[in-house]
Image 1 (cartoon, one colour):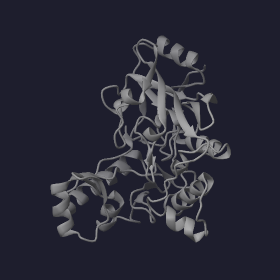
Image 2 (cartoon, rainbow, N blue to C red; image 1 turned 135 degrees about the vertical axis):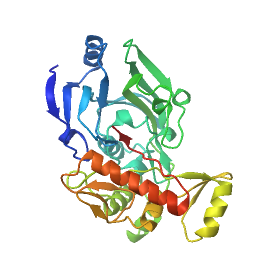
Image 3 (cartoon, one colour; image 1 turned 90 degrees about the vertical axis):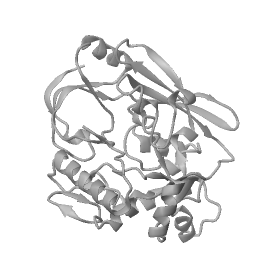
Length: 337
């Protein structure tokens, strides 16, 4: 292990924000991770995976630990299912591609989500009608203070919409080192009803889709809406889709009958944040180098040299306008530092 001082984090975050880490170390094994933790017991820590779900607004004074743990292994299987263990540093979409190539079903709808596997359980990533919790078995995590490696079951993780125990009572206490999944090997349960998947499949004259067909449909949809972080800095969806009560929903629908929505339960309704932001007039707008993507209002972008503070200032401006117009607060999905 080599500790670097004053390390630029520009290539380590998908927004491409050029801030410095006072101290930076990359770990490629659990033993190295435990060693770093034991050697820096008083040091505040900043954990860095794929850098896809964060907005850095200032230099990082904490010790930055880059989690570079790699590996995908089969820990069990039968005729119907396979049980995989994936290390935290594996790129999420590369893992999805591995599953498609091996005909392992269950995460094809989660294609092209940026970031690494280790951070996926923290916010229970989801897209197009599928969430991580649907295929999650367990995860292993190292306790930051004691160095103990603990296994967390699905129940332990307390998954909710873009949420888990790791964002709440266990925030800052554990570092996820691997995630275990159970996927199907045959009789895949395909989810095609959400979003534009059906339309995309129909455009290709596919009426009996495979998991590869669905993955390719999702990739095409996402690429049509979302910019590639390598060419335009972004962190995917910046805001969560707000979930409101049935009472608030009735009032909202009366005032905005044209608004799209999804029924979460008889007492809760989800409103697309992208629609709210677009109606507020922000889609495609640019404020210096900070902006909103032209094809998807849910995505904030860095046109080149925007600072994290400038992007965060824009996010606050959007929140205030949406609240003013619709009475709905939209919460950031990204972590802001």
